[in-house]
Length: 119
Length: 418
Ligand SMILES: Cc1cc2nc3c(=O)[nH]c(=O)nc-3n(C[C@H](O)[C@H](O)[C@H](O)COP(=O)(O)OP(=O)(O)OC[C@H]3O[C@@H](n4cnc5c(N)ncnc54)[C@H](O)[C@@H]3O)c2cc1C
Ligand code: SF4
Figure 1 (cartoon, chains in turn purple, blue):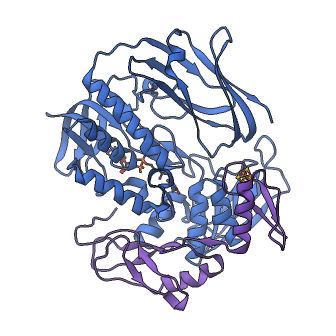
Figure 2 (cartoon, rainbow over the protein chains, first blue to last red; figure 1 turned 90 degrees about the horizontal axis):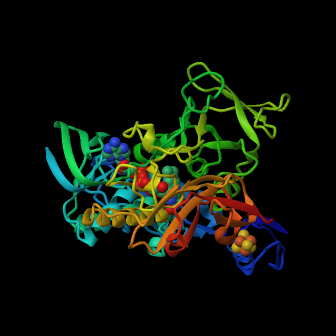
């Protein structure tokens, strides 16, 4: 039995999901779908920053290309922390593939080149 | 003196959205004045995702959302003067600007005011005890971590459950800090459920409701904080004190519209502490409009850009017809359950089809009937809404035709049904 709060709407129902993925406590059907998904395969987008050298901007915001399994968050973070860049980069560009053999790609969230000013 | 048709003050998401809309309506002589070196304002440091679900039907990070708006601004060749800080605006719409070249004065026919908000600090909430290093606001922590790449703390506590505080609790955890907890003085969270779940529960960070910091301890650097439970009147309960050893206390205790340029209290409303505006987002000074976080603090950028477009459309109408007379004019009073209401003054113009009201409730309400009444207590408009919470803004649209016969003040009532 897992307890969780539904995040689909502001009512924030307190859901209970049992071993067979039966959801209770949901006021509407959207909560049941959320509860099932969140217990069977919870995923999250991970966002962070990595150092970038040779530009006015010091940090490049990055994210995972796709949401990753919740259980992998800390492992992926460890891999993100190893990445450093010293070249211009385009928003959306994949800057590291299959990090730590976890099947996760890391993407730049911003464009940084010689013209980019520091916020 | 330089003269411009439309001047937009602040190049954040509101400023960009307003400029783009005004340009597309046909106002070509637009100038954005921006204090910083880049467009996008606060979005630059909001590296997390959750932006643009309504605008682009996609979940973007702050920098990605920003980049789309910056590109739309640049495509239109809208002029932006960076490192230009507006110091003052007078009733003739003469803008005094501090720039690297010295003071500049710009005369505008219309102005849209989009300067964002600022964070309440330790002083503003009268945090008891010492003032050591290590007590910082969530926005500052976000800037150090995400923009400068500097570590913020190892042992961290967060005061206030506003969204930025929750987002920083997760961010610092991912960066290797230990976040010991979040204390919230109210009996409910001030952040979105989504952030409670994905920023706190995912990392097993405890949320202490009805708790506050009762002492800050530390000479040079923060060493300890004392947390206490509070009673129904928000007074600390003796005997509930708990000490936490921390090097950093992150404050997420509220955002306030930035209005230092308008230090004239006549133009400011006490309910949001932003400019007093009517249903056209027009201030009491004809031709000055406002939108975004400097009007009221938004949780979603999607609502910010939408509001900015409405303000820009109204600025465009104003430029077309500066002497337009209102068909009706009246004030609207908020209900006591509302933290604030926008607008509090209505001017019905020929072209108006609807009036949009925005408000926040002061406490969570499961089900409520929201009623708009006249002085005789006759109901002009009513609607039932579910799950109203302080952290989510409510928006209501009322047909303008309803007001064509009305010239008296109206008032809102909130009937709590569940
Ligand atoms: C930490 C945080 C997290 C958020 N998370 C989310 C989220 O997950 N999803 C979401 O949709 N929304 C989120 N939001 C809300 C949303 O992003 C913001 O409300 C929105 O970006 C605000 O836009 P703005 O243009 O009103 O203000 P700002 O972005 O603050 O822009 C104001 C601009 O005005 C400039 N300025 C200020 N004073 C002057 C002056 N005197 N002269 C000239 N220029 C001046 C500033 O430099 C700045 O560029 C978040 C907000 C914050 C603060
Ligand atoms: S179960 Fe339905 S009503 Fe309850 S929070 Fe989820 S979406 Fe909202």
